[in-house]
Every structure is written in C-alpha cells, then in structure tokens.
Amino acid sequence: MTSWLTRLSGRRTTSRSIFLATTTICCVAVILVSTTHIGDARHALDLFYDTIDAGQGLPREQRHGIDYIRGFRNSATEYCDANSTASLMCFSYKAHDLRTDSFCAGTPATYRPSTNRFLLDCRLREANEDDRHNIAHPLANFPPYWSNTGPIAVLRQHVDMDFPDDSGHMRDHLEDRTLFMIQREDSIDNLWHTLLQVMSLSLSLDVLRATRKPGTSEAMFTTNDMKSSQVVILDAYEDGPFYDLWTMYTDMPSVRLSDLAHTVVGKMVIPLPGGSNPIWEGDWVDLPCNQSVLIKTFSLRVLDFYKVRTDSTKHTSLTLTMIDRKTTRILSNQDSLFSALQARFPDITMRLVDFSQLPFREQLQVAHSSDILVGVHGAGLTHGMFLKSSSSIVEILPPTLAYKGFKNMARFCGLSYFSRHGADHEYSGKTGDWHHDEVSIEEDRFMEVMVEAVANTRARKSSVQIA
Image (tube, rainbow, N blue to C red; front, side, top):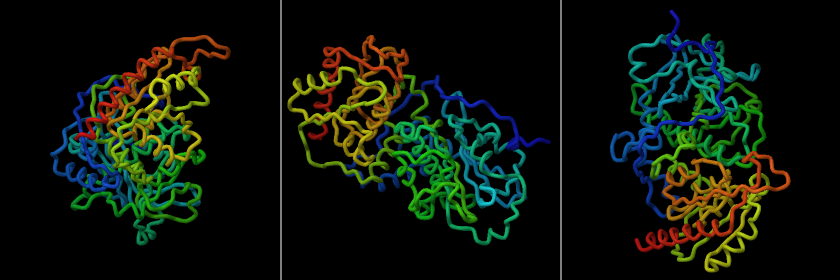
C-alpha cells in the first residue's frame, strides 16, 4: 500500500511566482510590547511564549497573530516510521483557503562532504487518523515557492532519505548543534524580500519553542540552543547587503554548504520560506487589520539585534525622511517637491535619504528616529516596519498600481498610512512598465497628502507624550 504521506519521488507541482489571498479574516488589535526601550523585548518574548502555552491572554488571529503559531504547533507530526533511526517532525497550517504551508525539523542529520548532501535515516510511515486530526500534510504535496525555495525543494536537492544511513557509528558523536537550512530567493539586495525570509525563519523557531518534545516538557528550541545553532546557506547567491540578518538567532557565523568541510551530525531545521510569510499574503487585498503580534515581535527583534535604541527624550518637533530612489520608479519632480515641503513646514527636520548607500544598522537608526517616512512605492518603504508607533507612512504609487502591501504593513505596525497615485506623464525612455518607469505627482496633490500626514502625526505624537 502506498504511504499516504508519500515519498519524495512523488509528483511535483509547478512553481507559482506569487500567491494572492482571496479571503479576508477579521483582525483584532494585538499589543505585545508597550515598553520604551527595545532592550525590554526579551522579557516581552518570554511573556509571548508563556501566553501560547497557557492558551489565553492574547486575542486570537488566524493569519497575523497568536493563532498562527498555535496552528503550526498543534499540527506537529512525526513522518518517520518506527524502524527509522531518525526523526522528521513536520508542521503544517492552513491560514487561508488556498494553500497549506509546512516546515520540518529532522534529527540526527548527517552531512557528508563527499556527496555535499545530508543523510536522514527516515522511512516515511503510513498515515493514521491522528494525522488527519493534526492536519498533517502529505510530504510530496508540500507546495513549491518562487526561486526554488521551501521545504520540499530543500529535501529533494540536499537530503537523502528512505534508506539506512551507513554512518550510524557517528550517532554516538551527535553534536549539540542545530543547522538552519536556508535556500534564499534571488532578490538578495531587496530588503522587503529578505526581511520576509528572515521573519519566516523567526516564525518557524517560534513554533519550535512553543512545541514540546514528545513525552517531555522541554521545548524543541530554546534560547540556549542559539549558542550552538548555525545557518547553512544552500544557494550560490552573493551575500548581499543584509546577510548579517541571518545570524539573528545564532551565536555562530553563517556558513555556505560548500564550506562544510567535515562530517556534521546534528539537528536540521528546514524553515518556512519567505513566500509563505503571512505578512506577504494578501498584499493586493485591503486587509481590515490592526496591530499584528507577529510583525511587531519581529521588528523588535531586528532592532534589538542591531542595538538600535528608542530615544526616551520627549521631542515635540517632527523628523521627516524622504526616500531618494536612484534607479527604478524615480520621483521625477522630487527636488521641487522636497523644497516645497521644507518651505511649508520649516519647523520639521527633513532629510532626503538614499538607503542603499547606508549600512543596514544606519538605515534602521534613520527609520527608527523618523516620525514620517515618505517614498515612492518600493522596498525602501519596508523601513516603515521600524518606525515608532506614533509615526506615519506616505506612499506615492505609480498611476495604476493597486498594491496594498505597505498599507497593510502600516496597520500591522500600528502606524498611520497615507497615499496618493502619481499622474501619468510622458517622457523620453518611458517603457509602460510601472516597475521601471518614473513617477510624477502634482505639487498640490503631494502637499495635500503631506498636510494630512503631518497633522495626524503631530496629534498622535502629542497624545503619546501626554500619556
């Protein structure tokens, strides 16, 4: 009888470049941290996990809140049969109608330099009623994601299974070491894509920390495990400007698969890919959501990792940062708009910033010290994730673009959001592709939205300081 879990040699599905959620789930406000200093985040995260275990305290939210972590945790399923010497525990969750996402943790996994692959002595078992109750997903039905990412791609390309591991003698030397198997997307210089991938690793570890090892009260991943954890980069792309982000959850430097020169026997985590990130899904849909515990927790972790602190001094004046795009979607009349803005609000500190010219820590410092972030649609607006809660985002969109991702992100972060579409205009070199073409907006329409944003931000900042 063919295993319901199926074998890795089973059918393959065609990769999809993007997923658009068609369902809308009502979201409720979730506030995880109300502390002034980012350094307090670790205490708040302990409370976060205590709340998951207690099953109470935070409002439930299927896609962007605590239920997302619970959903994966409650689906924990062993995929290896009783005769296997290895374990492959996988987690699956369907946060919306169109796809079930999964990730896995296996042990002991043995890396063989001679083959440049990992061995996992795991023969997939038959399914039972508990599997269906736990929403276990057939292994070969795990969905593929763009740039050839996701657990099924990693397993097929880098892990040998379903036969005895002939290095059994090495198991006596099992290292207290956890390897995070990372297959990155090809957009290594895009902050939005990179952050969503790193956040997906973060979510996977949150699930493992909230899951108890079978028959014990010990979590599958703890803070102490960070000391012996290491990211293994499986792809051949260059490091890129945000490479340090991958070491957020480890005390060891990241390593390329090709640089593992000796046999390693340890634990292996194949995390959720960036394409599964719930913050990304539905980015063409106007989600009626308020703050998200998932994105709030992740942004605090990034700020804490780079030691970016919140200035506790109360300032009544505002700081405005305008993103200076240099390649695609350039704001054609940017200089005149910025000058008009300075003339209209001489009491506001303003800066025109090309984020690509700054080290990432400085980018975070600029963003976190801003009250208003202004820019044409693009990855630079991802910095809005690191604004303080009384801040605002102003997005200038290409004329026909109906993208909602940054509007939703602003809501998830508790920010105010304002936008205007640019005007269609002719110029030499126009391609007709919004990804590349210049963007232009009339000065009166630009000033109109900026007046709204400034008034709103001043009121919010004043109310926070009074409180």
